[in-house]
Length: 252
Image (cartoon, rainbow, N blue to C red; front, side, top):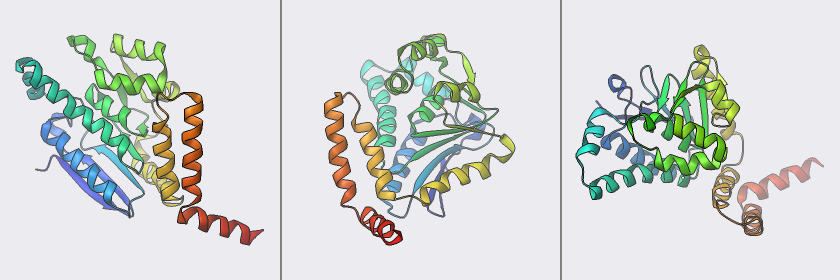
């Protein structure tokens, strides 16, 4: 059985974590498959968006028992290589040009919550649960901290990282970690309706917006404005923008 189901439907890539018996826990094979599929999607000019979801009852429960056992036995160098493998996945999600959307049902805990947090957009069912419980076993959701800090600020991030409690999708939406909460019974339909927006807007403009948003990390206000000006010019020169301007002028 494949660790990851990779499907394309009407211009959208659907990546389904396929370890339901393990609550879709992350292991080397699944992380590798995700990275391969993300790279393939990035090279496919026909795609407007990519959705990551989970098979079975949960989105993703984090690292599996075998991975945790390996962590406890690895040398420092081996653990660093293992951590960077997951880091590379999180970085790749930001580097993929199209929107990467997490569709969360059930539980998204530890590395599973980290995977969702690393995505550009998070959609969730009204019964979904999130959490970074690593602190309970003396561990740290380390790479995710860089993303969480950008999403929430210091006070909220500190609370979530150091207390390890689970929180609901509604609370995640209030905090700013979840974009939309949908009823569990209509989740599949609601996801498709939400993602269809990206088939109606300019692909090149979305790509430039995503790149610009993340380029501004750690930039001064002046530098961020300059990066924005350069992106503005780049957008003006795209076929989509030129066609959009002509269409607008023809109407007026």
